[in-house]
Structure formats: structure tokens, C-alpha cells
Image (cartoon, rainbow, N blue to C red):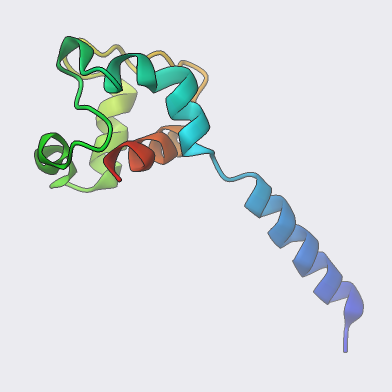
Length: 96
């Protein structure tokens, strides 16, 4: 048994797991201002009816839309330093 390989695989998995975006944190810090209240017609967090037409084209389309901006929302909302993974995680948090 190759313990070095097993250990390396375990460490890589631990590192990759910790690199995942935290959707709730991103939402709370960057998105809640509008999406918690519906300001400027932003779909409210958890409002399945408001999110339904937006989710029809899939998560990648939502990420692309958030990246370039939509309506009153500027590109990336208030999260200029967010990666696509950060935006995706925040959107997934909002639509649940």
C-alpha cells in the first residue's frame, strides 16, 4: 500500500474542500443589502416564484448574468473581488 499517495490524496482533498466558496458568507457580506429586501427589484432570497424564471436557463446562465450585471445590479453586484465560484455559491444560497 502506498501511504505517501494516500496521504497526498487526503491532503489535496482537504485543501480543495477548504477552497470552496462560502455562499452564505458572500451573500451576507455582498448580496443581502438588495436581495434580502428586494431593493431595485432584486429577487428576494428564497422567493421560489421570483427565482423560477431566472433559474430556467441553469446556474451557469445566472452566474454569467450576475457577472455582467442585470437591471439595476452592476457587474458582480457589490462583489468586485468575487470569483465565478463565489458568485455561484451566493446564487445557490439565494435560490434555496
